[in-house]
View 1 (cartoon, rainbow, N blue to C red):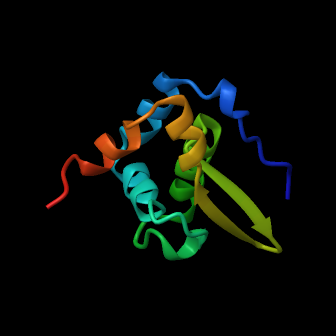
View 2 (cartoon, rainbow, N blue to C red):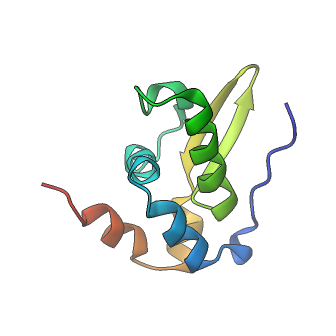
Length: 101
């Protein structure tokens, strides 16, 4: 598997994070990772073609929202909450609160 690009925390841009989280599938992925637990990518969203999810994971990873860790043929995802909270305090709380209930 090719090396996965993850931006340094200082290089995460608000416009990229908002663009990534602006898609309903990607927002669902980020919300599912809000607990801080690392999760296998195949258990997060079902019913979406793998090729589409690959695109969504890449958008989230390259914007700095998630970190992907390969383990054999599987990818594990975590939310970069500490990095995002340091760069944009309160942003994730606002984004995750919107539409709940």
